[in-house]
Image (cartoon, rainbow, N blue to C red):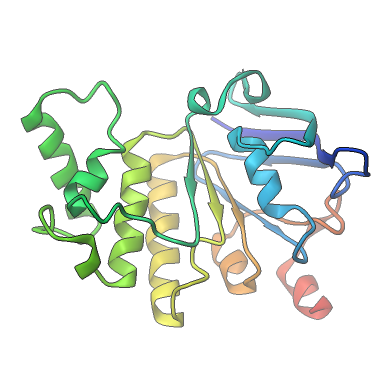
Length: 226
């Protein structure tokens, strides 16, 4: 299914919109990128799509995921996954138990749930780490585990908020490839916020510059502006 934004803007109470209205279509398996200077509202846009818009902000326009009007649903009913720059794993749970938190309710029974988690760990290159303490994982391993936990929830769309910014250059390229591969394989639309032109260039998807959201951006153009 497609993620569609039609004339979407976010307005803080008593002020003007953070950015001009956005119209964007993100196809299944595609990663669209939102760029722009700090404070222009990139993360706030993701909050609006995910249903986490803070008090004092108003959303205008239409956000649809397939045939569903997301604005009419609470956050927990939207089935929109979130991935942040900090790969947060609960320290009091094992790696496997962290992933199990993402399992949908239809996966029932201890053995079935364990098998689903083990399969996810295997896909993430973390085989045999079910009972490991999250503190013993490397930064890249934590990021892969956090992504698989999000995917186990079977999201219909994925929002990526500076997901690779705290990784070094080598891990950043590895996690980009890993994340984008899983998005394509699951054929879900994804919207990524980043300041990194390399992140945007790796997606092969549309790029929106919030300073000119009505004009499709190109990486070369953004490089020339920086």
